[in-house]
Length: 290
Length: 212
Image (cartoon, rainbow over all chains, first blue to last red; front, side):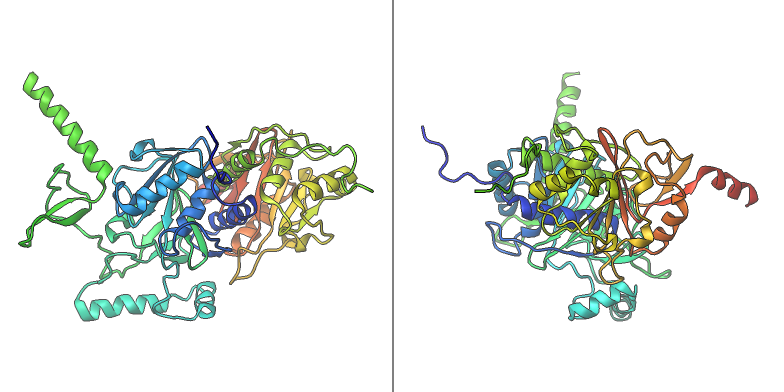
């Protein structure tokens, strides 16, 4: 009978804010891996819950887009469900859980297992955009270090890991060198996912709402995970397949299944797991019928 | 009461939110995939000599925070200045190096890249974006482009680039991370050239190979 009481601007943000974000994105794409400051606005969720990613998606999305949102690989966790519902309400865009149907994939801490395409944009939610932050707390100094391409601190940190543990102990948010120039934080994705960023056909955008930074990796750009000649970067590996869909070469989550410490290892990418399982069951039925 | 709206001002975007989003996406894709034209289709009637795609890019990206420089032909047209001022609120500046967006109505009227803001080593994003109207512009020769956004090597005729551009661009490219980014606005498409793209004349390239 009556219309909605509040009508939001399409994409929630006002047009001026979108232009600020859009201009920052264009400079970010032109300077791969460089953190462009922007005036981060309030969105209806607390800082640290993906406000940077939400602002990027809001500035990029249009009615022709199909949005997928994942949180640690899953489409059905709180953060993913609420952000997807938010954009269904304010953006007039379709949404999906299938990686191969999406044009924009907003992600927290994973890159989908399904290979990305040229038609896709990946939006990463970033908590700490500055890879040198825990080595040098002063923003003025880290900016200068980036300007001077002075990344000795980072190599010392990796070296100390090797001296102490015998291997580089960082397993997520593993620092990368973008286009041979800027050291960049890939957001807390597992180091398992780092190789997927290298020469990806998709455009990758990073938004840090609380820290007010935007950065980007254009498609087909070199993204090298840092390492040494004698201790090169080693992504995480899993020896066993997913216990639901039996996929190998995928990132697995450890899931508690009882009160006695029993666990199972399953795909972190729920969409990949569901589709692999469906395809497997379909093959099985065809075999039985044959 | 006098009105602030000049007479005969043509409208801006028919649908400001969606049109701005589509034009921005084309520009984003253009800079992300250099030398690949990205279609822009908008229903827009900016005053001459401002082209349709040029007008669309200005409306989508400019506002009171982005000083604009206009080339003499555009500057001499009061309707153009009034249209931009009314629809975007952008300030029009006299010095090209003060501008965030530098607007040239043809390749020949584009200022030299060295005269534009290039940012600093700490803030390379505070650099100018040069937008050139490339409607009906002829190619300047056979070019090859490499860099982020280009799988392998791209071949391109350089339509819309000013004369003697390659030396300027080489200098611009070698200043990375500082530098100017370029948007070429054709009839119904935009084409991007971010500072990361290396351009060489294809003939020189073959010579190099032969000499190697």
